[in-house]
Figure 1: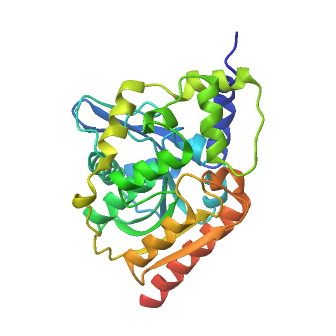
Figure 2: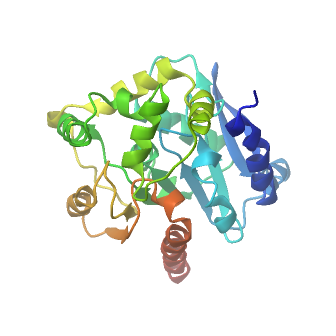
Length: 309
């Protein structure tokens, strides 16, 4: 029987190519490769040693799906004015490593190396959920690369207290039970807390999604374990970048109060914007509103850049 999710992949890839981005594999180091969706013109320019003529935006996905599935409604909305890169983090979408390091810092380091090899010198990062934690690490470690960030449904780091409170509130015993479902019932439970509007899909579609999107289970479980740090080990970096927290107001996983608390912790360069009638998957649930807010922030960044030049 045909897997309906797998059957949709050629259509999604075709839409990405119409938007001007194509898949490209980058060797980060020996036995570590990352898949990127990159502008076709970038690869051509790379051969001619030319720099991109549009600001660069990097879209970093969350834990339940690879890059172009996560950002399917954002890529086409951005490519007219921005050079867009969509990486697949390690153990998603064909990106692999034989390293045993599962930390967000390692993901950030590999992503930085991949972007550098693609000729990216400066960029704005948009990070969702798990991808937001990787984005924070990138901004902390490589401020020369990351000019600004848009973060959605994420936290600086997954501390003991945040993780325990979130799981207790949602009724899950572990992060793996929540984010690595192995049954239709488990996937339905994840979706029920990830969106504001209740969705209905036939069980077959849930089964097909589980088969296609939840690969590399052992490695992804290790990624989840490596996320959690002790409360006493958390430090608030002194970010130099502007940070925009773009949130679904009904996010049940990382609620709006967490975003407001982060804004207080991060200081005056950080702003918060809520999108009503949207949950954790705000970029998929209300893509038009999300894209409008995202583009307004990006436009404000580049207006500032022009004033400074």
